[in-house]
Image (cartoon, rainbow, N blue to C red; front, side, top):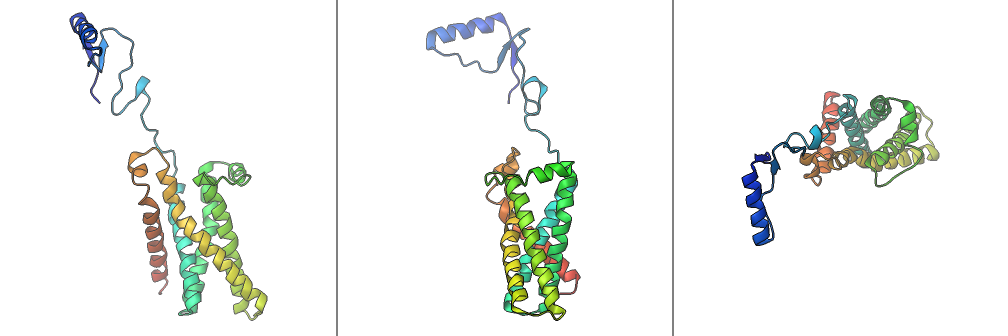
Length: 227
């Protein structure tokens, strides 16, 4: 953006003559000497206010992105491993990683919001057009599903094997898988709806990028555990 020029009376008179002759004056960006008009720039908007607000996120938010992404992807890995029955140990470990993430994520969000009441207030209404609202409800549904899957699975391993527990485990894993896919990708949507140009202009690429990142994190954790 070009800085406005302080112009003399002769320049203003020329602009008036041009306007009278052609019906328009191509003198944008000029400011008379001593005029109180604000002068915007690339860094500062009118009246010295920044054009873009700086993000107010604390360190808990990027950590939440990592933990939530790894947890959601781990739930998907655990479900796939259970369906194909290739490695029961892999399925169990992936589900436990997802449960750990589900336990860590709410405190991180509450710490960022500042008060637990704010987190609870977000559960009063579900707004499908709000990524934050969808994210909170997704996290709660994911936590319920993964807790159901891990709890029933551990009871089955300890000898309490019956059809009801098997059914509960499958139901929990399906819920955790579906909500896990949303959990690992909605943060990309959250970035895309901000006013930061580099994020909003690439809104179609952010969700797949977050899914790939979450999958890589989950796979890396499972590799560290020996799988």
